[in-house]
Length: 284
Image (tube, rainbow, N blue to C red; front, side, top):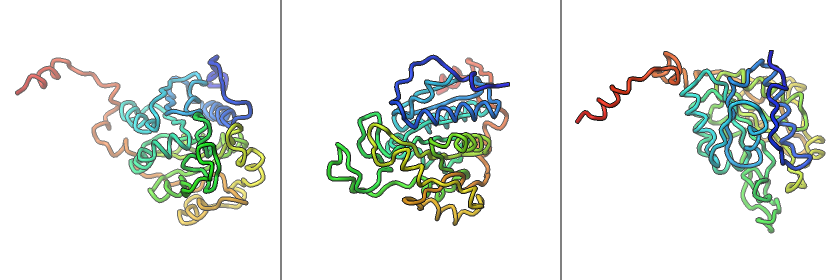
């Protein structure tokens, strides 16, 4: 039986006290243990940023990759060994900024993985400049007159591209977030969980208390997760009330299932004859 302690490690954690990442890390461990998921069967992949440091603090397989490039690397890993459970940790800047093109194409392909986006609405690693999800008018040291661009809406984009699992969590609600991560991993296909979290150092507006007053669970309002139009409408709700939970869920064939060449088993389990490769390279 897998326990939370199976994922504990001794790597020094240098997140700021009160950072929302701590809640996300705790919920990840709880979810993995509840799913009885052995550490050796789990692969965590991340890009660059404070969120991307998360895999360092769990004892399991991990790959800390390039800025914005976690999703294509995760896609390759899933193609090579689709028996692995793959979870991607990314921030709003890493995923929706540098990695925006990969975000859209991973959804289109319906790669069987779970994407956790730690959305604090700033670039926390590089001292708090605006990210794609920063609200218009947000003042930072890099944008002293306020952000002039519109905010990126990841849930609406994911839904419009046909994502089969779209959810929002809150780092301050560990029980709900744990359930969402479990549901995302169980979902066969691409699962997005955008996680609202405070940045205690660089975002003094969207604080833990600010979110606590506004978030509500869609389950309490009998939301039907197969209603795409309602989910899309809810994805634009922001301000006095912020919905959390599963917005939409529908299973469709995954990229792995559509790719015929790997139907006989993971590429990693196949044997190779070096001589055949040499003959191929030598052929003129």
